Image 1: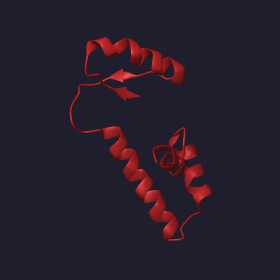
Image 2: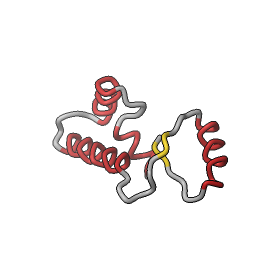
Image 3: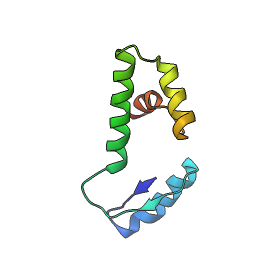
Image 4: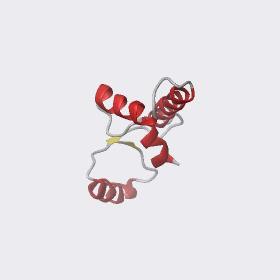
Length: 83
């Protein structure tokens, strides 16, 4: 997970949260961008378009992304988590 913190004092809380989530983190500079969420939202948008076009089902899209990209969630599962 990419993270930044506003104050150095927040580092302990960040480590505790990451431990509870059983995930690692990478410190990045605090700036505008939110690259990871922007990419994930773009993938989610394309997944919904694929379903609306009738190309694939909800289950097909999620399974395809998990197996093909080794993502922990399919894009439609992500959309529920992010909502």
